[in-house]
Image (cartoon, rainbow, N blue to C red; front, side, top):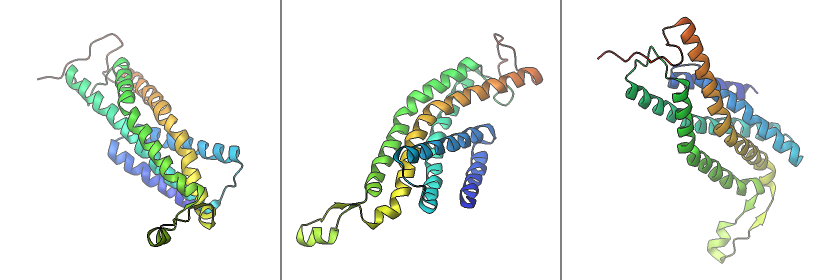
Length: 215
């Protein structure tokens, strides 16, 4: 637990420096904690035990994968927002784009990043399947006698199996979170920022034009 909390804290601080804010790193951290639900659901459905050492290592590894997929999506949303801001010619430091523009940016980013996120999940899951089921191949006998001696199970699946299945269960669940929960949270956070800016800042009300940036 100490290693897990330390790793999550380091991830959070790195994300703060990357995004220069707190809202987006918080959204990513929420998705990480929600992805842990997939791990526990998978263990409950299969009835496999919670192995303290290897399952916890799998959870820590899962956090890094979920962060990667989330950053890919959020970063592309920011790119689309900057393009829209340049089209409108507004001051990005003073005004926010409308909720309709934010919604369109999120939808477009979700369509563009759907394939990379799903491909990342599929390739990771398929790559972990041999480790999870304990696929054993004797490469020495394969090249010397042309007999790979392939068999399933063994001592290595007892050790590495819990780690692999933890990442597989969590990643399958986290993929849907990345494509559904994160866009919803991004939209809700933007709406909250708009309300705050209209109440305490110079953000124009709904339907009013945002002042263009001075040339």
